Amino acid sequence: MKPKLNASNAVAALLCAALVLLPVYSAATGNIFILTLFTRIAIYALAAASLNLIMGYGGMMSFGHAAYLGIGGYAVGILATEGIGSGFIQWPVALAASALFALLIGALSLRTRGVYFIMITLAFAQMAYYVASALSRYGGDDGLTVYKRSDFAGLINLSDRTQFYYLCLGCLFGGLYLIWRIVNSRFGLVVQGVRSNEQRMQAIGFPAYRYRLVCFVIAGTICGLAGALLANNTDFVSPAVMYWTRSGDLMVMVILGGMGSLFGPVVGAIVYLLLEELLSQFTEYSGLILGPVLLLIVLFARGGIMGLLGRMSRG
Amino acid sequence: MYLVVEQLLNGLQFGLLLFLLAAGLTLVFGIMDFVNLAHGSLYMMGAYFAATFVTWTGSFVLGALLALGATLLLGIVLEYVALRHLYGRDHLDQVLATFGLILFFNDAVRLIWGPAGLALSLPAWLTVPVQIIPGVYYPAYRLMIIVVALAVAAMLYLVVMRTRVGMLIRAGASNREMIGALGINIKLLFTLVFGLGAALAGLAGLMQAPILTVQIGMGENILILAFVIIVIGGIGSIRGAFMAAIFVGIIDTMGRAFLPDLLRKVLSGAAASTAAPALSSMLIYLLMAIILVLRPEGLFPAAKR
Image (tube, rainbow over all chains, first blue to last red; front, side):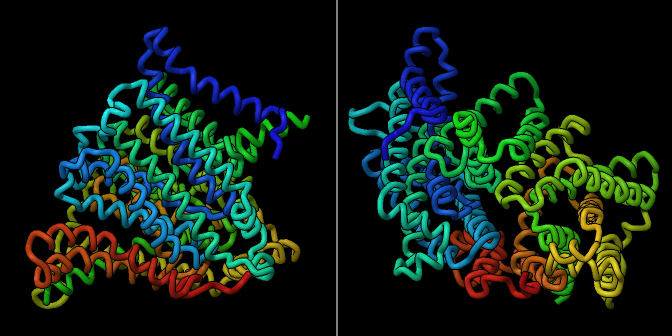
């Protein structure tokens, strides 16, 4: 696939450049806040991108994607509490736990379709939420403080703001590259084929269920990485990370940016979190504006922001 | 034994309340094919309206009736202004739009009523315990919830099964385009159904208000329960929603009441006290997952579209 120069690709390229240069701006102006804000945005963008892989390309509308944020976060938090501070152990465990959870719930959920799929993934995420709330040894409802960030044996210092930002950004770009490769691979084409017409794909000999399941597990694992980053970013993990409204936030980011477009979720995460942040500086009641804005976007900007850009560049 | 009876009644009462919420949701879902996450907000608005109107009028019944009317009106306005433009759109668009409405309503309530919760106190005649069987007393108010909800369920059944409007609603649930083609004003019908669903959600909210605190976000947890119910019961089926609601209400209440003791017999004390709250909260989600795996269309699937 040869990239074409159009409005959406130009926006994506500008965005990447701006994200890479952000710490320079932050250091020059002494604006630390913007760096921490964009660290959070990069993490959520990674989570949203992973959701986009199954939602946008795979047609699997998971309403429980925030569960992996919690699982990745709790893997880091619990291991840190038990005295295992090395990121070389914490992170693989976080990824493996997320993958395992995705395999388990995916194997069951993918037997259903449509709204039933939305609801069953939601149910599983709620179960994870209640399990986390009951972990009294690890803070229960109140959440778990991570006193020490993951230790990578001097390779990278997660407590340094700039280094941690670049780590998050690196994970985001790595995740996007992986998703891009997957989407354009034979495997990804089969998954997209199944989204369009499952029966036809079955008929020409592809085991649709298995392809979808593998895609579901990959997305869950990527989101688990975002969870591990998030726990390190906030030094804290709580059941609230897995609550269904957080899954809703992720969905909103994907749809806002543009489902099934590689950079859509990144744009969505930036716009959604920036809007939230800006509005909360003006008014205590940000939802009064954010809510109707979402409604208007649905009513008048189908295909999200990237879809809008695509239409503009076509004229 | 008395405890079991009491908890069974609590479960029944909770289940019936959930039915009021789920009935509106399943009607809107089944007929308009519309996923309304803001249904929980209507439930919350019903509770806030009730708390306000009861204080204004000084009468519980009058306040409740006014609140019911207000939620009905709110539902109709909401449908007319925004939601009717989303019928026929992708489910995801609807999820996004109504998710936005949740944000809007939560902050609107915070602006109007403030962040602190409200309490709705009951009139004296509803606070006395009633002796239902010798030796078992049950709060009159909870008993009233059971009676009112059963009456509403019966009325809903009669309206849906025995009247012309009900016939149109059932026809709409099985084939929307066809009844439109037969010259029925579906726009009006849809607005009506949505208003009815909103009023039912408001009724559930205002009846629950004296038992729990009226607070922001109260609709979010219970909305998910209502979704669980309509999924278990089969989307679009009122009968399924009724059965599933009572089932879920009783299982949830009994689980919370008795599971800790049961677990303590099997597990050690510490393990049981960790597992019990998680397991009792998870119980109905577990149930739903099992049912969906075994019967992906729910227990009482409505007629195929």
